[in-house]
Image 1 (cartoon, one colour):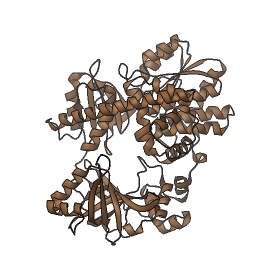
Image 2 (cartoon, rainbow, N blue to C red):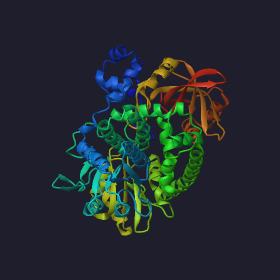
Image 3 (cartoon, rainbow, N blue to C red):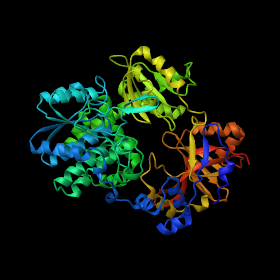
Image 4 (cartoon, rainbow, N blue to C red):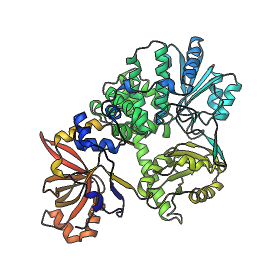
Amino acid sequence: MGNGLKTALPEKTMRERWRVYGKKANFNKIAETFHISPVTARIIRNRDVEGEEAIRRYLYGTVDDLLDPLLMKDMGLAADLIWQAVKNGEKIAISSDFDVDGIFSGMILWEGILRIGGAADIFTPDRVREGYGLNDRIVREAYNRGFDVILTCDNGIAAVEPVQLAKELGMTVIVTDHHEVPYTEENGQRAYRLPPADAVVDHKREDCPYPFKKLCGAGVAYKLIQVLYDRCAVGREELYRLLEYAAMATVADVMDLEGENRIIVREGLRRLGNTENLGLQALMGANGLDPKRLTAYHIGFVIGPCFNAAGRLETVKMAIDLLRSSTMEEAHRRAAELKQLNDSRKDLTQKGVEQAIQVIENAPWKRDKVLLVRIRGCHESLVGIIAGRIREKYYRPVFVFTDAAEGIKGSGRSIEGYHMFDGLMQCEDLLERFGGHAMAAGLSLKEENLEILRKRLNDRCTLTEEQLTPLVQIDVPMPLSYISEGLIEEFQLLEPFGKGNTKPLFAQQHFHIAKGSIIGKHKNVMKFQVIGEDQAAMDALYFGDPADLCGYIEAEYGKEQLDRMMDGRRNDVDLAFTYYPSVNEFRGIRSLQIIIQNYCRIPR
């Protein structure tokens, strides 16, 4: 199992740059110490996990390895204020948000405060009329309803004016957030602006010593409830029940699955298999999911979007009501409504994506490094999803805008190497409102400022052409003969997979294609019988676009060779694949196969 692929692969194909990780370590020693294969040891090193203790936590970390919440700036103060409010019989208004992280961080705080005897309710902004985060309407409504404390989650770090209003009304304000702290910059020096709250808990604070900076809003909320439960002598098992909420938010908010996040998601997934929440049970059932076989993929692409659909197209109250369901009948009804709403969102999203592509392809700025796309008639709650799809297609930072009640609103999704929030900070004078982090942002602005924003963002963008070409990182060049069921089972130690801990990727330069066919109910899967360089044969599946792949083969080898390949006749088709191995089980028979991720031709 050599590393010849590293030098043989072209630095850039038509679509991607392929590279083999070159990180060094004593893989045999790691394998021996942890009773794993050298291949698995190499993958762990490729994820920047070094040292025996770090590897142990990566492979076998438990809730006991989570950090002390009191390391977070203002965490103890926030817990003191909440506990004092509970003892005084004061009502706590939880100011949440309308995405998955907002929903579940709100639920963590709500359930936690009720458990210690407090009175609380959840307030969320109207996505269309108000936009993200705490606002004056929420503050005044909470005050008029007799709430004494405002506790934010997944928002608040930029809510200077609403926090000031709450303080003027005599309310206690506690901010918990995970977003970047706004700042002004002069002569290269940044001055950070915190809201005037009684406590501000955000590990992104410059003065916060908390070592792990990648928790989502629900992760921060969980830490706060941990401190409160400890002070009230609530058993740890009750605390750990909340990990399923934190796991949902961590995956859906696309946080890096490393460090604490990895433990939160792994433990949360395990607990979701036996969740007591009737709403989650019903939603998994409505989507045909087996709770015992749930993965991060199912959260990110099946369950999470259902919760997001509520915040995007209707009121987020639908999602919260589902999670608060007290009977299974009620839960099933609400889960069905949420799934139907998500199905509707999918159709609207696809139309928006098609519209955005049409705008880009006919625009003079099609080659811009940062794409700003305005589409008409799109529900503004969908622009973030559409931006993500456009980013995938064109591989560059993308902002998608649509008309709003006042001006235009947009949402952005970025690529590695471009810090979206910092980019917007340099254009703060053009924006009415904005917030976000490195990889995503939301903003609103006046219509006349759109073209000025486009020019300024692109003039100041430092992305190179290399950075604008997707990089495919290959873990190990691995021949088919090395694959075994035992190795595939061992890879389960590396889960959960997602951002920051991608599924392992293997490759070989030359696969001869003995036969090809297009299969599936919708004819959207390509199946090959391949022969590797070591003469091992195996089935290979490709879940991308079969037409694109066949078109590529025809362009490289000609129609005659494509036809011969599809007929299973002798042919010259020889391709490089990146892949992931899996086990196929059909009618009780198990067989090894590979799932193709990328392809290109490498001349012999």
